Amino acid sequence: MLAPANMVNYGNFMHGLLKESFHLNRKVLSEKSMHEPYSFKALVDMSRNAFPGNKNVVHRPRKVDISSVNV
Image: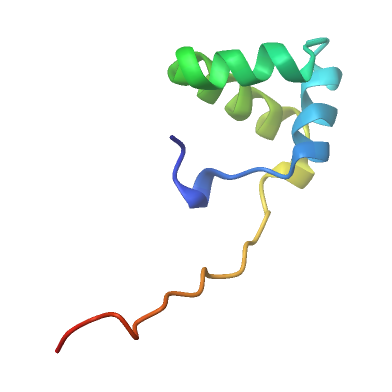
């Protein structure tokens, strides 16, 4: 699984792939992400380099429920 810092917006990801002439549908991408994570990461990196909008994606921090933590 990719770390949150490596996440890319789906639309920008697909745009980057299309700029590099990779025409893959959602099913192929899903299978590749589950069974070939290193190949999928290579696609993400390639998409990120092809489309500058992929490089500066900022995600809000996830909320963590600390009410169940025993101190």
